[in-house]
Length: 338
Image (cartoon, rainbow, N blue to C red; front, side, top):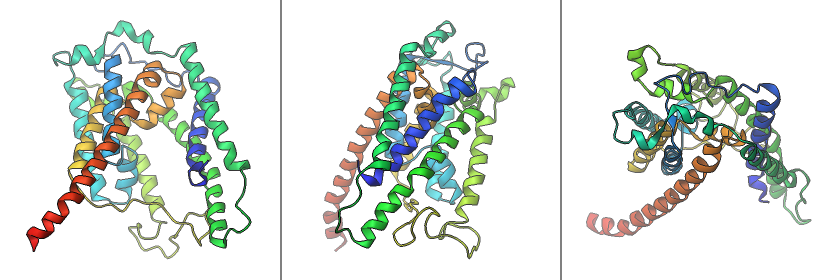
């Protein structure tokens, strides 16, 4: 019901509904993976692998404040050294996990399943039903943003502008989510072999390495970089027409919400390394995982996502604890300095 958060619900609703429409009406074979179950370089993730992968991704992305999209595309596009450090950390960890979890790895029996179990990983009527219900609930949650009550009679001009801006975010969020969902499907970033085909560098030796993921991230990075040339303060080249706020917003109160944190610390490196481990274990980051959950994939919907939320909540507690420790140590540091 918070007007400032309605655009997020709109994004989720549009993403979920676009996913359902795409996999049922546009391309029913969009998630078909020709290499899954037939290529030794493409593993079948076990239930425990999905649980651990979701937990590490949730914990790491919260602790490191970003993932493949936040740091890898948006952060690099604005030439952030912090994001570059994050990308190096999660790429190294992802490659380590995906490549290292071979049949000779002691964890292989626990993190990988047999090729005969492929059928257990596919959507069922029950999980498809859950995905459809969740998509419907997300769509219903957006309605207050369109038809909710307006401001009180004594609202100031600034409050009215802020209220209007919050409503103006909803339509762009819907289109962004739809493009994101379709883009994931077309680029095949929802297909396991495309992720492991890149992260498992043994494929370079065997001739089966797949550069698709790098091409997709590179394409997104180029588009994001060009877009930032129109954001004042983040453009690499002089642009007198650079904007102070999004085109859909009123300039009186509108603004771009671009991260400005430049700190490279243990939380960033450790968090992104954990994210990379989870990515390499289960082959999923949040965007494709949302797509597969709404498409009804049982291990993603019932194992990966619950573990993701647990990891994220735990990381939030850890971050709060670290802040308390740092604030309590500050007085002693000041006294030492004196």
